[in-house]
Amino acid sequence: MMFDDKFFDDWLDAQAQKVMGQVASGQSISSDQMMILMLKAQTNHFTHLDIDLRSEMRALREDMDKRFEQMQVETAKRFEQVDKRFEQVDKRFDQLTSRMDHFMVWSFATTLTVGGIVIAAIKFL
Image (cartoon, rainbow, N blue to C red; front, side, top):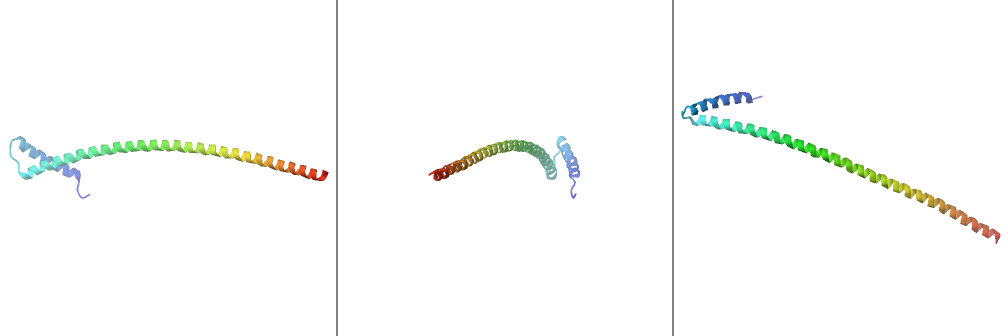
């Protein structure tokens, strides 16, 4: 690592305390010392922004996790409903196939019966 944050923070804290000691004792400070105070204020501001951003990101992640979980539950329910509908359609096709089979048996039996009657009528005439 090229630059150690802890080293910089310690140095900046020490320099800012020196400058604040001068201000507290009523001494004037130079532009360079003013820059140290500004830099310390900025690093404090960045630290608070970082903390706020991390907590917001954590809350956002938790919210998104909850939403995804809800979506998964809703999607699973929808697929269950679709599966039930397909089962109903399968039952209807089975019923239709069964009816067609009965009709075909009835139709074949009727055709044989009528054919038999026609043949019998032709023999007896």
